[in-house]
Length: 114
Image 1 (cartoon, rainbow, N blue to C red):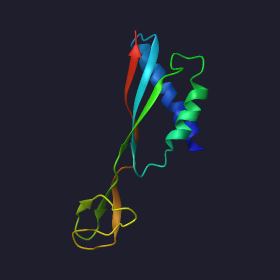
Image 2 (image 1 turned 180 degrees about the vertical axis):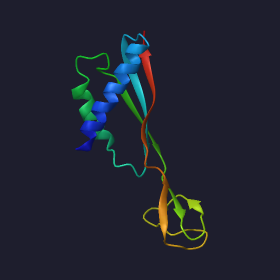
Image 3 (image 1 turned 180 degrees about the horizontal axis):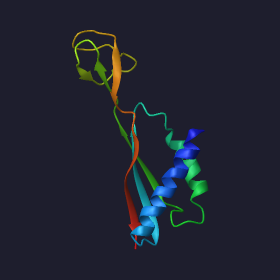
Image 4 (image 1 turned 45 degrees about the horizontal axis):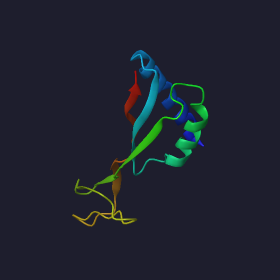
């Protein structure tokens, strides 16, 4: 359900920047979503379709680019991508790891018509 708040903020940000640029319509938003992010694409799209009605963003395409997660071993410092559910360091076989990347959710760019 947190996607509602995220989508509201996304719409406000897109509208603000589009209006500053003098855009007549927002055509596409390019979003970066990390593998470990809890953001669900379909939920964001659902809320976007509802919230953007009657704005210059109505009908804009949301493009979700997924980026892989990355872990860091606390024993040896090696950074690696997990292999499925296997979070064991491939360098030293350590099992104490922390997330080092892939938690992000951000608006990369906005495409508009002027």
